[in-house]
Amino acid sequence: MPAPFKALGVAFFGFLSLAQAADDDPFFPKPSYFRKYFARPVTQVELQPPVRLEDYMTDGKLELSLKSYLGLVMANNADISIQRLTVVLNRNAITRAFGVFDPLATANFSTTRTLSQSITATQGAPTLNQLSQPLSFGVSQLLPTGTQYNVSFSDFKNSSNSTFATINPAYSSSLNLQFTQPLLRGRGAYVTKLPLMIARSRLRGAEYSFADQLMQLVTAAELAYWAVVEARENVRVAEEGLKLADTALKRAQRELELGASSPLDIFQPQQNYANAELQLTQARFNLALAEDALRRQFGADLDPKFRDTPITLIEPVTPPAPVRLDKEKLVETALAMRHDLKAARQALDSDDLSIRQSNNLLRPNLSLTGQYGVSGTGGNIYQRTDVFGGGSQITGVIPGGITDALGQLFGFGLPTYGFGLTLSLPLKNHAAAANLADATVSKRMDVLRVRSTEQNVRLQVLTAISNVENSKASVELARTARDLAQKRFEAEQKKYELGIDQIFFVLAAQADLTTAESALVRETINYHRNQLTLLERLGTLLEE
Figure 1 (cartoon, rainbow, N blue to C red):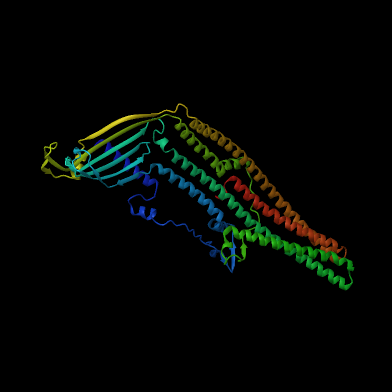
Figure 2: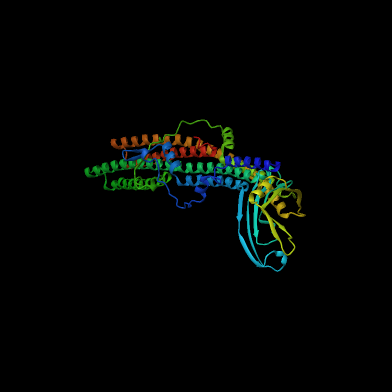
């Protein structure tokens, strides 16, 4: 076999194995090719019900720690599933980028019979009867080196009733190899693979963006968890306040019945009791809203079995032990871990590739072309005498057929070969120049976006640290205020029991105690929220 065909075979099968390793799609003629590409497309989407909810059922209730709750969120949250699919779209873009290297096979066969009236004696028959049957097939492909090749085989069968036909039927076969190799624009594997490299770079950016979106969704889910905890603590505080108001009201009623107090003194306890009932009703309503939002986060609202199942949250409300926060160290951690910053930096890599791609299109298109072909002819050979006289006679027939044509073809005795250069030189190329300018400006814009993002990251981390430290101090102050309010309430109650104080002061101390309890709950939950925000700003929430 001549060297051009050997080189082509090595390049083709080498690239085929490379493409197969990079792409798991079936290829012709494997059975999986027909199963995948000739099957009826599936357009129906079946959504699975929420999973793993049964694992956390205890005594007819969903018992969830923060860790188990977030596990259910990751498994069942629809928004997280949507974000996962956006990454799949970018993976498909890589598969699409491989499409330029897909080999294309073509085949053609036709048969034509023609009957025509002869108009000259040299046509060899009064009515010329001809049968033409051309057959051709070929393969073309772009190789990673930028080489475009085309291998084609053709065979042409022609039979006629003409007495002048020496070979009848005649088989004409040819095998041709053509290639085009760019020498300037599009030269080399690096330039050819630029679209693939850009797709891979964008996939990495999409993965960073997905991680950032996932972190935001997890943050929202955890905030929903703490919202329920806060609402339940508010219900507990409101219930305790109602009990105290009820006790005070009953005592005031007994004193009124015994004549120990004025009828005018009963209105204040009654008002306090009504306010306590109102606060409890509002707290229970807010709890119901928070629980509905919580069920939506982990998909319990999609399953009628769990839609109204009571939920018990077992995560401790007490804030963890305070730790010292090193601002500069945490800022450095955020600059290294933030996924939105990684995505912004990854865009710079895509910009570099786009600049190289645009710069390549500015070059003249100089290509080396080459061809190598062989041919062969076969068929029955008719030996005649006096062909151009009036009495042409067949003196012998040498049998033959397509095997003769193929034998002559693969004997490579009748080659055709040649080389050439093709130059396409735009005297002006405004479109390519504008594309390069756009790519350069995009790179500069993305560099500035990275700087802006870094500044935002630093500011966000410092703000989050300040909020955590403020919350830590607020929790201690709220706890102290609650303890003092408790002591004051007990003191006012003892004074009232000794008859040296009025019920008004007891009720005021009771209201202050309820307010202090609510403030402690609020500041404790705010500490958890601010701690969560700090982890999100650092970019370490998913690791935590």
